[in-house]
Image (cartoon, rainbow over all chains, first blue to last red; front, side):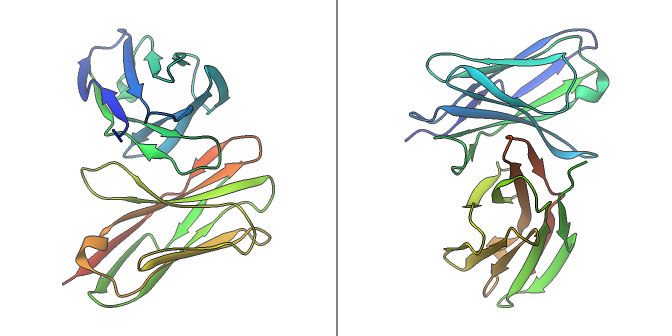
Length: 112
Length: 111
């Protein structure tokens, strides 16, 4: 079974731009969660999608948004990028809440 | 404010030693406790999902216990090997789907 894939793996953007990251979950998994990892803040929960609905959202500004498609693929969008948005963005998929989560390799975003 | 703590922050052990770490979390609104292993330059790997008070899980030389009433979980590694070197993260999931990660315990196993 193919694992979780994320594209792109690396991205460099400038302040004020927007970015869209993509995550393809393991086949059959309906839940996709997004996380941000920065050296200072550790791993922080962004949001979770299940069957195309956002089930929960972490404490991030409205510039961070996401969606999930009918095939469970998910995208995350960050508008008006700030320097502090530079981070590793990880997505993870699972069959449902309470199940083991499988992480993708991440997208390393650098904002200059 | 929900807070998840892990101790120790880092640990250096000799190959063959057994070790354990602690994850402390709020005892209210508990839904699940996840343990992950995160090796450098790799993605976090899920080890266990624990949902019931008194749960004990085992995967090879690694095992974990859960006490939801007092808000802690222990992760044990028996006979540590160099390949066990990684950061071990716990994540607390609330009944209203908030997920809070602990800061991690960094384990180095010296051959």
